[in-house]
Structure formats: C-alpha cells, structure tokens
Length: 114
Image (cartoon, rainbow, N blue to C red; front, side, top):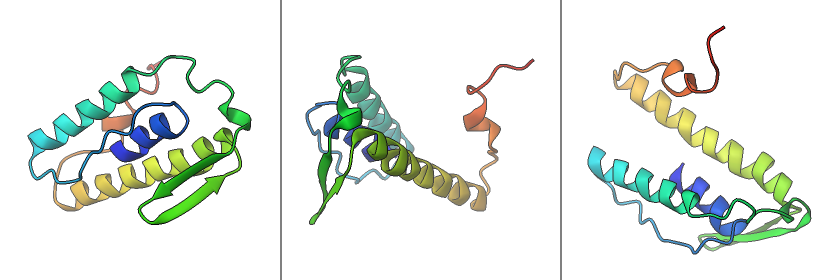
C-alpha cells in the first residue's frame, strides 16, 4: 500500500523516488515505513498533479514497463484498485490470524454519524 501511494506521488506528483526496500520485520518498522510514505505525500505541492488528467503516465514495475492513457485512468483504474487490493488482503490476513479488527477500523473516519 505504501508503494502504491508513493508511486502516485512519484509518477504524477513529481516526487523523488525514495526506495522503500520491503524488508520490514517488526511492527515498529512497518510504522516507520508508513510515516515515510506520509512524509513523501505531505511534501507534495498541492498543485503538483494539475494537468495530469490528460497526460500519459509511463512507468516501470521491476522489469515491466507500462503506460496508461492519462492520469485519471492511472488513479482510478490502477492506483486506487491496487491500494484497496493490498489493504483488503492485509485485512483478511490479519482477521485470519485472529486480530480483532473490522471494517469500521478503517472506515470510521470516512463519515460522521447522523
């Protein structure tokens, strides 16, 4: 999930690509990685993605090079689904392992109770 957010910042936000090596083995290391990802996103200028809705996005993922028609398609059809896929997978693994979480643990900030 952190790579998806980071690559959005890199690919259409103009951020430098900070390598996050995927070698975390502790909860504290995972929290530090989340903090690094948030720092990358927080450092973006609020207008850095302006104009990308019509520009082609060309990127690499390992040895695979791909292009997506424009920034809107990149966000809506690649970045968001990829982010949610990994979030859902992590949620399912945690639930399977007995961690007492449910959907409200990550949806609670999406709305206000009426």
